[in-house]
Length: 112
Image 1 (cartoon, rainbow, N blue to C red):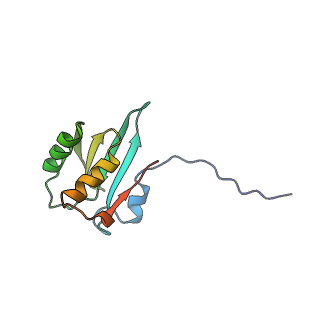
Image 2: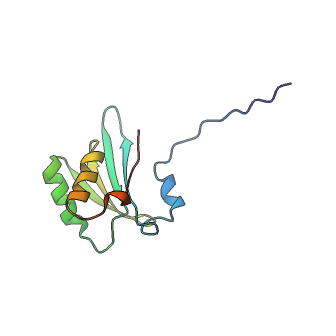
Image 3: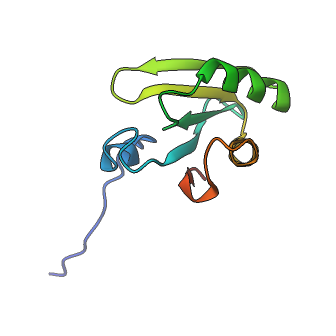
């Protein structure tokens, strides 16, 4: 008999990598992810910003700059997360670098 290693597909957890880094603030990375909703709809999440920043002001600027809707979600484990409609990963990373909130090497972009 021949032994064949097969992988059984499991559910995908977009925040699984955050657990490796110990949540927010340990490695000081800002994680920008995309989550697929139904059909063509998608959601961009920004996690890992410093706690002393005003998330509401950042969100207001992002919404105005990219003409999309969004909100701030408060999670027990992951802290505050900014959610935006659509695929805004590259736009958000450029905005955060240009506005001086984070450096380019502190940003990790995830997704397909």
